[in-house]
Length: 72
Image (cartoon, rainbow, N blue to C red):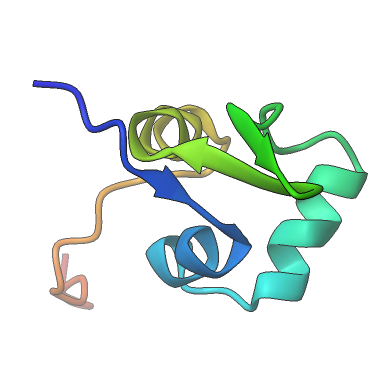
């Protein structure tokens, strides 16, 4: 099932837990994929585009919510 809902800078920022200005900076530096849609000069991305981008980012790893055991 595809998610074609459109996300703004604010939505992307909430998804990756950063400030919207950080996402704007990612775009400025070519680190964000091109927008899927532009309306009134504002860029928007499909949720699936953002999720694929997040999954492909270097250093991205799943968070388990657990801290590693210092004994291991």
